[in-house]
Image (cartoon, rainbow, N blue to C red; front, top):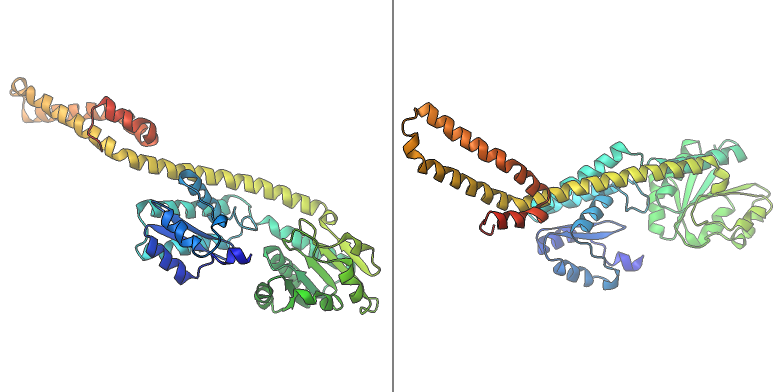
Length: 386
């Protein structure tokens, strides 16, 4: 975490870096710092390497970079897939760079496509909406186990999106107050403030275990965060009051041995049964649809980019064709001299239509597959290098 934080930029720092690099957009959030550059990325790589370990940097180019941005804007690269905040952050980073004159036509089109892709994903899929189902089911399970939640204290371990959804679910069902514990205390304080709760330092969880009625844990830690040895001292001070613990983390946060302690009832995702399974299935289906939208929008942008490359060739081809048409009409001037002005106009229009019809298909194909056809058109029609 600390190594990643070395790359974090304030909005002012991000704007300054974008201006320094030119033709660049800098996106810096609590989870990522990314620089999108039109041109040589060496300066961006050097600027970021000066802030933190170079081995943490990733580089994506061309179509891979396009899909990366589109997945970010759609929330598919977030810690909690589908979270809505990232789309606004992408828009803000783009607007900041654009308003300072730090973008070009390609970057403008790229970010407009990315924002459109993000909006489509939210409008056409349920990605991000199924996450609330599991915390809501957990709150219902707690109510079924210990009765109504009024006057009950709830300890939420983990201040991420699932922790936020859990706090919302318990408070909506009448919980008296929510306490939030997190490895990074400032994150716990931020979430607790939003819900009128209280932050708990991670090393003082044991004290809150003696007072809480319900504990819900959902961190992203790779190992167990709550052991039986942490709970046993708290049970001695509870005077027999039952303690409900619900573990919705993957991998698990709570030592299964706690469930065998007297006075403790432990539930995990298996206990949530069909709710968790249905949510997982719906999430997978929504993510699959979202990925398809991202690929579709990515192809649309790359197609536009290729068509842009083909425009000089198409323009040269049409100029050459019109030069030939005009020259042939001039050569036939003698045989056309007896035509009326209206008839001469018809001949002009007819020859122009013939040229347009002949060039229509090559023009379309050149724009769709510029890389494949542009050089071929230059060679076949002896066009100047454009």
